[in-house]
Length: 281
Image (cartoon, rainbow, N blue to C red; front, side):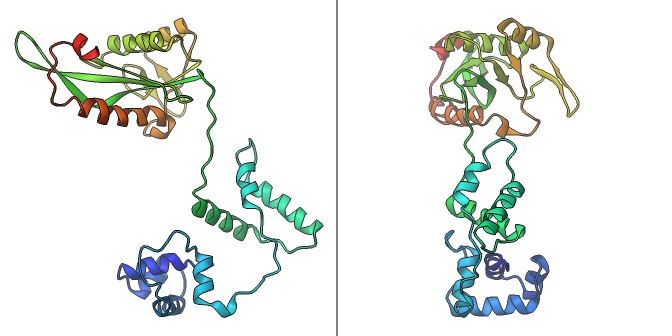
């Protein structure tokens, strides 16, 4: 299918028809025809509504060509739900769809069209996969990027306060505590205090790849800090570090960091604290 939306977008960015044809790719004549028809129909504007898929734009540009194809449209709501199950792929669902069409003596869509329509369904409905979390199974931990300031009551010197964050994905119940540094001792202490706050330890712990916790993390091996590993053994938990440069592996901790950065760190920016105990209270 012609990518009508992309043609219109690139044309509105003042790209030449030759550049558009090379980018997509498609013929220059197709680009010229689509641009002329889009201008006539008032569609040569960007951004277009999300509801205007390529199929909808085609119906507007070529109303005379719109007719029933005789093909059976898959139930993409059902397909999207089935994809959440282990081992289920679009290839398997397309195969089952073809068998259903054969039984009903209907014409199925080819695999490419089947996938294109599914992508359009996901884009149009903003469908996302549901991630199920068991209560108390996993704890995500991280340091907040922004810092607070504690003033030394004797010297008047400003000391940075680094905020440790721990979040339970199922309930998003979170714990935060400030420390004067991110050294191993404070890292371990923060975990202990978090477990005390939550009233127990989770089965799985998901930290970032800070040197205080993870010495080396490659595709072939994960080497944990010895003290961190001993802490995990003591609490009977498994440490599964997030993949390097993969914040999606601990999205709840990242989200909690953003909340704390705004509603705690930024909100307290004009207050002066003279001890970490005062800041904690």
